[in-house]
Figure (cartoon, helix red, strand yellow):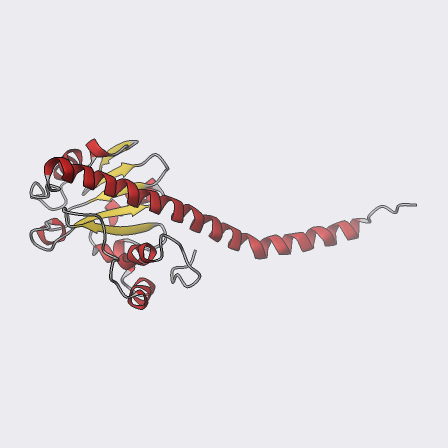
Length: 212
């Protein structure tokens, strides 16, 4: 004859399941976030490079000479409309106080900002900065943080820094030393986390220094 479970047994079982769930849930959530990051950042890298290369094929160079004023969303919007928008699919473009937030179809986003002549003019330093976010809403919040250096504005988990010289792909991780990238990403230079991910083939490896 089958014996029914007592209330005490049910409660003990539920308690055990609760403990197991509490122990495994952070790991499951972290793994999910890593998976989303890997998928979206790889797609972003492909999309932005296709846009850059298509622009260069048509116009020879990404025109950053129009970036004449720091923290001017109207200047950034014109720059984006000329150099990127015709060559990529976007969901929404929003002028903020200091820069431009661009929403992409997969829920991620980009933030364009000119912090100074040195920060974006490839004739001065060889690069143009683009901040990318796993979630578009994070990019909107980056606008509020632009009183700090770009390497402090990104966190290597929800937001990442990319740059291009206006002449080829965002290839800053080529010929880099992985140990140096690992140390930089794990320290105060979070802008190097995107370079580390690129080096690792857009995979969040076990030794990735930023915790999820």
